[in-house]
Amino acid sequence: MILRDLLTRIPKAVATGNLDQTASGVTSDSRQVKAGSVFVAIRGTETDGHKFIDAALKQGACAVVAEVAPASDYTGEAVWVHSNNTRDALGQLAAALAGDPSQQMKTVGVTGTNGKTTTTFLIQHIMKSVWTRAGLLGTIEVDNGFERVAATHTTPMADTLQSQLGEMADNGCRGVALEVSSHGIDQQRIAAVEFDAAVFTNLSQDHLDYHGSMAAYYEAKKALFTGLAEQGGKKKPVAIINSDDQYGEKLVKELGESQRVITYGMGAHVDFKVTKMRQQVRGTEFQLDNRGKSYLVRTPYIGRFNVYNTLAAIAACAACGIKIRDAVKALAEAPQVPGRLEHVGTREGVNVFVDYAHTPDALKNVCATLKDLEPNKLITVFGCGGDRDQSKRPLMAEAVSELSNLSLITSDNPRSEDPEAIIKEIEAGMKSKAYRAVVDREEAIRTAVNVAAAGDIVLIAGKGHETYQQFADKTVDFDDRKVAHWALRDRPSTRAAAPAEKKKNFTRKEGEWRDRDEKPERKEGEKPEYQKPEKYGERRVGGKPPRKSDRRDGFKGRRDRPSGERKDQR
Ligand SMILES: CC(=O)N[C@H]1[C@@H](OP(=O)(O)OP(=O)(O)OC[C@H]2O[C@@H](n3ccc(=O)[nH]c3=O)[C@H](O)[C@@H]2O)O[C@H](CO)[C@@H](O)[C@@H]1O[C@H](C)C(=O)N[C@@H](C)C(=O)N[C@H](CCC(=O)O)C(=O)O
Ligand SMILES: Nc1ncnc2c1ncn2[C@@H]1O[C@H](COP(=O)(O)OP(=O)(O)OP(=O)(O)O)[C@@H](O)[C@H]1O
Ligand SMILES: N[C@H](CCC[C@H](N)C(=O)O)C(=O)O
Ligand SMILES: [Mg+2]
Image 1 (cartoon, protein in one colour):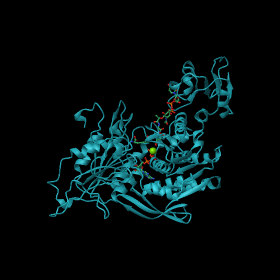
Image 2 (tube, helix red, strand yellow):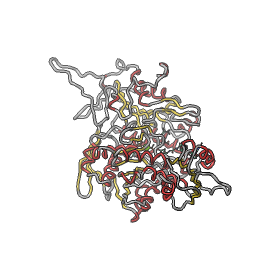
Image 3 (tube, helix red, strand yellow):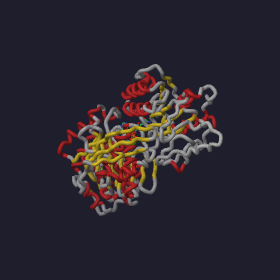
Image 4 (cartoon, protein in one colour):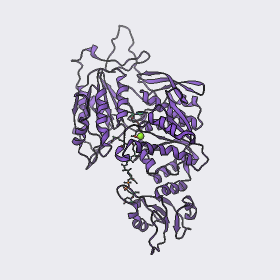
């Protein structure tokens, strides 16, 4: 694209130099600059992109966009563009070079403290079932309609984001579900994204290390919604808000008439309302009322919080023109979101779940949901991330200790911090003495699985889909789901010691979720019952570990170990 045309996207900027050059791309990272790139200098928290202008020029940048004017003796061939907001400029230029992909697709942004990943997975699933091809961008992965790659950020930098959206549009995606983090909003990573709908799931404590206060955190989230009114394109965006959440309710009030708002929840006056909810071991069923019509929604997910995620997904898809009944139909086959309340195995009546809860509210919700399954004991393994909101640590401890019969406090990405020091901070918030601190996460998981008895549930919280553990000096392979499989496999049998009646069967009338090691007694002449593995979408409960082909995340089960790993590391 010729610079002269490209720079019309930042009309307030002042450009000096030959504008008839061709720009081949745009980046804010000098290390990515190639001949013909536009380099945009951004002031960060660690360093200042302006320091790398010389490096970018040496690598062949055809233009530099900076928040400072060129030096009076600047005679370089590259165009110097002086802008007062280079973060916004980055988004505008990247969007123009990618062909404004968000204007070519139905684009839904999902923000909130918890539930973004789950809701975006649901939205993409519905979009795909109706439109065949749809994109997804968020914490776990970026799906461009043809291939999925692991994500580096929940919401990547504007240059990366726009080029990923561009691939989706080029691949024929008709829609995209995009996770929008508060960092993403604050750092204008979503500049030049035109939304059809923006969803607010909820707000509770997290990221105070970055935002400083809940008020500032809320304001960051709110900017996504006030920004809808300023979109320049033809879209008539809708704000979709969980008004049962106290911050959601506040947002609805504050947006007032300035924005088209659709509410969802269980309260009296919401647009998408849940009634008659029935939680079951293998899923949830509820009635959805919208504009005088009722729909019976069935999903394979458990937990009240997932009902909110489901509602948000239906409302967002409806705002994009999808019929509610088509969305509802698709949801019966909703996929397992990797590491979100994922049932990873069962042995001798001990059931293990992996979940990504890493905030006080998420932990409260997931523990309460598992308690609803009426286990004999709930045993929770958790830790708190290093270099992240320190003040949430005792609150996470409080949430876990109040709802678990036993807690194992361990490490969860200590990053630059001392793992034992983090654990001490967690211990300060424990409300019960029924806990053990085990710094090594594998040992903590193995301990939890070994001390569990038939009928107990082990919850491994915090890392969900993650496949690594980050320490100050290294990052090592670590996958809670694999370790849980190994722990279950290696668990010493308690069969002889445990009387049969102590075992707990999570059995429902119309199906079974029972210890598959248990052999039902056979009467003479009776054929053995064929125990077909349960399948709801891609979610499997009990039985053998899932096959690779069953899973979105490529996890191959117990034999899938990181290469080069020693036996004694298992
Ligand atoms: C706090 C934060 O958000 N930091 C992000 C931010 O870093 P920063 O502002 O400190 O940037 P910087 O390192 O000072 O660099 C400034 C500029 O100089 C450039 N640079 C730097 C070095 C060089 O040699 N050449 C060069 O051009 C950089 O590309 C950048 O444009 O911009 C960087 C890229 O430009 C990001 O990689 C970095 O994410 C860090 C790694 C991070 O951990 N971020 C997390 C907290 C985050 O963003 N999380 C959210 C929410 C997660 C969730 O709850 O789901 C997310 O969306 O992922
Ligand atoms: N709507 C919700 N309300 C409260 N808790 C939720 C909700 N949805 C999911 N959770 C809990 O939060 C955890 C994280 O869910 P999810 O990954 O969908 O959230 P997220 O907002 O994408 O998180 P992140 O900020 O890390 O990207 C889940 O594993 C579950 O324990
Ligand atoms: N996106 C979140 C994920 C946290 C997950 C937890 N495993 C941790 O490392 O704290 C963050 O970066 O704050
Ligand atoms: Mg997420």
